[in-house]
Image (tube, rainbow, N blue to C red; front, side, top):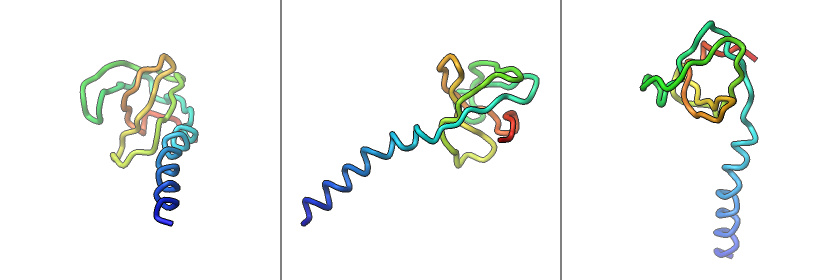
Length: 86
């Protein structure tokens, strides 16, 4: 009985990252220019311009910041107010 419970828990843990990536969404930048940072309030690693599309990687507990991936695949953080609602 214990082995069955442990097996089902390990399967659940393995399945969680795949489910999280399936929930990503594509959003547009709505400001003239936004700074892409390596961490919230961290070093600037790029610039994003109005109407560029980014993939929101996941919801963040970091207030005001969203982890994203650019169309070229560069991961970073952007201020949530820089993205269009929706």
